[in-house]
Image 1 (cartoon, rainbow over the protein chains, first blue to last red):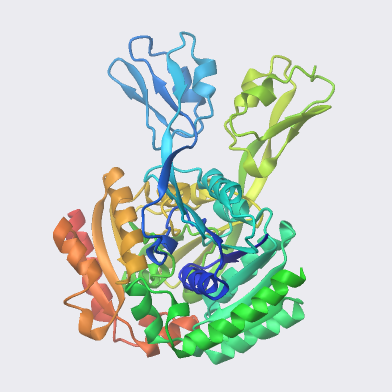
Image 2: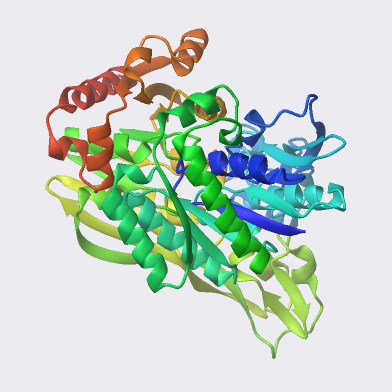
Amino acid sequence: MKSLLILSGKGGTGKTTTAASFIGFSKAKAFADCDVDAPNLHLLEDFGKGPKVKDYNGSDKAQIDINKCIGCGKCKSNCRFNAIYPVETGYQVNPLLCEGCGVCEIVCPVEAPKLNKDVSGHLMLYKNTERVFSSAELKMGRGNSGKLVSEVKNELNSNVYEDSEVAIIDGSPGIGCPVIASISGVDLVLIVTEPTISGMSDMRRIIETARIFKAKIAVCVNKYTISEDITNEIEEYCKNESIDFVGKIPYDNTVSESINKGISISEIECKAKEELKKTYIKTMKCLLDN
Amino acid sequence: MNIAVLSGKGGTGKTFVSVNLALASENVCYLDTDVEAPNGDLFLKSKADETLDSIVMQPEFDGDKCTGCRECVEFCKFNALAFIKTPKLFPDICHSCGGCSLVCKYDAIKEVPHKKGEIKIGYKDKIKVVTGLLNEGEASGVSVIEDVIKNKEEGLNIIDCPPGSACSAMAAIEPADYCVIVAEPTSFGLHNFKMVVELAEIFDKKIGVVINKCDKDKVDNNIIKSFCNEKGLKILDTIIYDEELASTNAHGIAALDSSDKLKIIFDDMLDSIKLEVGI
């Protein structure tokens, strides 16, 4: 099975819309949403029944036993995350700031702090007789989204049907831990950008990041009619950098109307769909040639 | 006063709102904490005065003193250390907690600076512009965000936040007196909007909502507005989608620099926020 990851750098360029349409065009039997702190792909995919939900344990969180605490303050002075604050009779931990490093445990002379497991999100697996969709949602106030992304991919890989040819993975914006976690092991990264100077600046950063992790890259421009001159600039940039430029999709009002009804673009007829289909065909060629 | 501008979903217009709020203010500090994809200065075009390294401390191992006891490797909760003849660090997953050097009995670990990114400081007229840039390949931007925030001023600070709702967004809203949430009235927009409202509430922040990219005929009736009314959330303003605006924005020209059309909206927005915060 070959896997295609969709990234963008800048948010809101159309990753999920593109992912959903590619899932429709390819009739993919395996797909995942790795944008765990702002997931949306499930809004477009109907499995007829809800997902199987599993707790996700992120980083442990320290708790201080106030009856044991002697108020020496060693935990507070050694905590690099400002997670420990004084109370009347000693110290307590703010779970929003605690990263679970365990330093408080080792510096405490009376064993008052203890690390405990913490549910910091949920893994959701949708499966029917034909398809598998792995997704997750981070609990608000919790971090470590990179580890959750890896779990989403593991869930997908351990549940796919053997005859699945492609897996399509929707990624997160930015270049940090959830993005890096999503890149590992994929066969192609499709970068969906938009013709704005912000989109272009962020595209350069995600290309650099994908290159550090030795991923093969292709680029498409969404909403290209917003600025044809910047679209040309992006196309030129890709040519100079020897990156496959796989298409440009016009801005089309029908797209957001259809998405708002929970319908993927692959299921309707519009200008954007035609160009997306061409983009899809070129992308698959890059993926399968790899 | 610190105003954080956040969104959950990317591309709803955080930078658009932050930059124009800054332009509508007199003396203000604009802080770009979207360190993975910072774009504010593409619009503000400040003259950069200085560039500072953003560093964290990470362990370095003294092979002569290390006895190979592996206590540091076993201690590290982030699996950032492996033992291959000597302890080896994976720098991009190290959280810089300092635990390994605390557990080492042989004084074999000392902490040395590791560069995570850069902080650029510049000025555009009376606006101080601080931009954080995370180096490509680095996993966590939290320390860079904290370094951006250290450069805030006494008066009005506008914090342009990263998208999402995980560690980075939390670090960016932490110092805020008020959170402006920019939402677009789409099904994706609503779902992520609900998530960040919950986040801001967990952090006990006051919230105001800007509905952006709204269809002209949906100003009085859209899914974000209905949710806000249901939850009793304050709507600061609704900005109508405008092709001309999208085009000037695409070319890096801030709305308030190109026309006076939106000036009144951002002036009012700032006044409402000040009223809400109570200054």
